[in-house]
Amino acid sequence: MEGNSKEPLRVRKFQVPFELNVRTFKGLVAKCFNRLQIFKYQLESQYLRIWSMDPRFPDLTAFKEYLHETCVQSKTYDFQIDYNGQLLDRDTSKYLEEINPELKEPLIIEINQPGKFWTFFNDFVKACKKCHYCGKIDFLDSHCLCGVVK
Image (tube, rainbow, N blue to C red; front, side, top):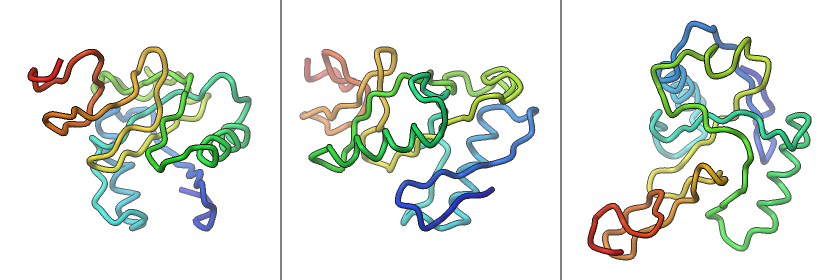
């Protein structure tokens, strides 16, 4: 694993074997971040999402600049960032080489804090919202998952 820990927006690079499935990979990523003690909480694999690189950006530097600009423009810390990459971890039994053949493109790992909104969304992955009745944060469209609020 490499990366500059003093950068405000950190880009971490991992070397991973092809033969890992998504579930195992997410568990290892969570374990690595927990060892680094970056967060004030224990990161669990359920708080990670794996994305393909957004095709609008030619490299990680351009992507990082976009993230920085978007965060600076936000009026809150609950960032909701339009991201055109593809969510790759819907089927956690798939292997890394299936979701990203030959690992040619970087995998973007989105980390969510428990009880907070997911950051990335697009036309296929909706932004999270909070139900005003039960308080659950989830991908809510027209009604809440609790079934009370419509």
